[in-house]
Image (tube, rainbow, N blue to C red; front, side, top):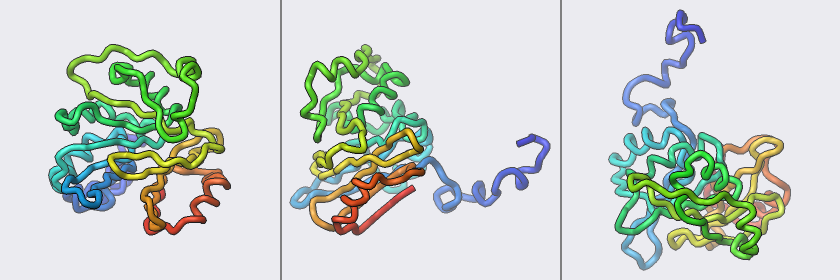
Length: 235
């Protein structure tokens, strides 16, 4: 866009009008924050889905407004910038009393994060869900070595729960007392991202971010059709 053009000609002026908190057209990268409380517990949990490159702006804008004190866990759908480039800023929302922040992701995304943020990978990952059965020697061949971290960065506990692969089994992972099942979706013809299904009952909550053609694999579609979904969010 040439600088000689008037702002109203090159940018939708509705997107920059007024208070960003009141303007639904003033948008950041897709992400959701889930606030919940487990039955018979007085503790409120906060789980973030994707930590995009606009995460810091989103946190400054919304966390104080909704009184979000910290984040208990993060789930990453894939390794692109609009899902991971805010990871460095997680240091400002970690409750240090609870130790390292648990970040759940695929093996594919872990490799991306390791190459982009090597200083945040200061301990080997752990494996969860169906990935817990992978042979240790195979893990060593597939993953990059951790790098020693600085004292001023986010302390993260990396938890791998998928490859992903279209044939991955649907195995739930316990995230802060919440059962979350990752499943693969297409984000372009040759790239797989993760969607997430939450809940133990038939009233499921499903979140799919950044999906594109060819869309939802047949095996995943059949699984989603077999359960009762109360909320379905897709971008």
